[in-house]
View 1 (cartoon, rainbow, N blue to C red):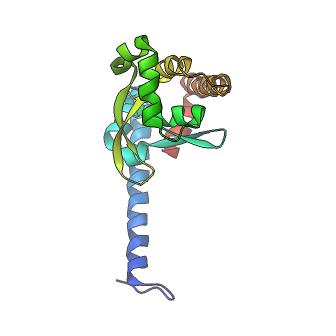
View 2: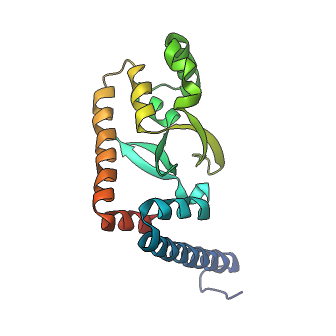
Length: 182
């Protein structure tokens, strides 16, 4: 180990690990770009989702100062249901809120397994956990069951996220820029 002035061997080791990880991510981005050029955006997204871990592909979006975790699944963005419900309800116990919501809305409850899919996301404590996630269509259905004045602004925010995705489809350069950010 190289000793850094004012630092320790552990710091040097951590810096080396960070450089190695950066190189690996850069190589993945280059390979994804090659796949994108040869086979298109969906193939590049599939490539990235297979090559990268849940920690690397969990991204955050922000709605009214609240972080909402999202990931790519089946070539589209899927959002953490718990994060969305917490944002719209300010509920302290999101799990209990979702249980009560499903009990109130029998139709939502009967289609819950179709609307939500457990996907691996990076939890706030830094661990990878399976988290109920939903795509844009499913989130709109869940939002219908939440009596909250925040629902309409959230729908507009979600539509904006979807619009950005459509723009990426129409302009592949935007998609490449997003993939390089991954």
